[in-house]
Amino acid sequence: MLPTVSSTNKPVKPRFPFLDLKAQFATIRAEVMEAVTRVLESQVFILGAEVDAFEREFAPLAGGGLAISCASGTDALLLALMALDVGAGDEVIVPPFTFVATAGVVARLGAKPVFVDIDAATYNLDPALLEEAITPRTRAMIPVHLFGLAADMDAILAIARRHRVSVIEDAAQAVGARYRGKPVGNLGNIGCFSFFPSKNLGGAGDGGMLTTMDPSAADRLRVLRMHGSRSKYDYELLGINSRLDALQAAILRVKQRYLEQWTSARQRNAATYIRLFEEHGLKDKVRLPMVPPDRVHVFHQFVIGVRNRDALRAHLQDEGFPTEIYYPSPLHLQPAFRNLGYQRGDFPRAEAACEEVLALPIFPELREDQQRELISAISDFAALI
Ligand SMILES: *Cc1c(COP(=O)(O)O)cnc(C)c1O
Image (cartoon, rainbow, N blue to C red; front, side, top):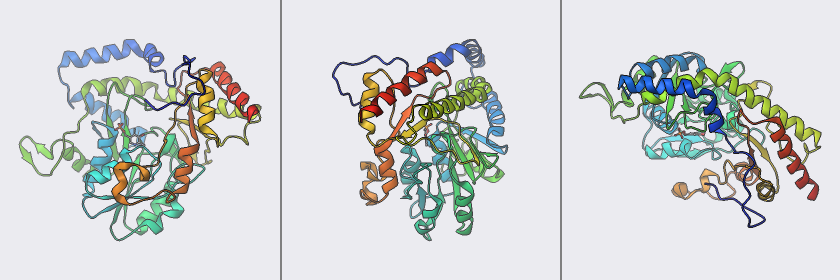
């Protein structure tokens, strides 16, 4: 649980949840139950036909190519770096404003995460700052498509090509997002997706997917996720155990059939928020999500930026409106990365974002009347300040 700030001591029951997975489950219950039963009847639980089918069905979401499933989005990032042979002495460029896994996997392999600040409007890696962070040791960059908006990939890829650096897309929050007409996941060398239950395509537990157009990378990934083994008791690489469960695959196959519909609902809810902010004359008081015209945002989160964020959040909580903060602290200031020697002030835009961002509920089943009430509450607060 995130710490919450409240201006009063009495706990207020939220009017609706931040994310309503129960409401979603109610609409697909019979199909999910059928899928789970099918797997239980088969008694095949790890990889197998169900997982193969899901990999085949998922691949087009990332623009075709090959899809290799694994045990989580974090493992997808780890396996991608392992497939590129990243290790001690190597540097990997990552943003400081992201989920911990993006940088954590780099450090876990003994390589050095090198942070590069974000663009203040999109919250994504700023390509203008990339070149000065590249050294002869730089092996890869991991742009994150944060909140469901693609990073500026053409600019990033041009720099990566010039310096012969690989690009791994952290698309954990961005399944279905588009950049200049193309879906994310195969814009760089390897794409990484997460099926954590709260993601736009979420399983009933952990799960992840790797996508690539490169058959030899796909082959390495398949070997690496299976103890480095192609055939039983024959270990050609030093791998890990990171496979998708058939139960997850079966459930995700059901949910993928609804993904487009759910994504449209998220986009509709985002458009409604933006219209309501405009109607209340709040456009100058909050920073609304920026969607460059060459991108399709899938709104994993709807994140606004406000100066007095903590006070607004406390006000909304008192009124029964759930919000979240992604992310309250930049990675370069986290104790786990202390040894890298970064200091406050090193990445001012990421640091400012952590003070100002507030995520509003955006789940597909959210109703317009609920959004109206929430924006009214923000408007009341804005009038007070
Ligand atoms: C969720 C997430 C991950 C990790 O995915 P898991 O499946 O939870 O391991 C990595 N990066 C980003 C940006 C994420 O949001």
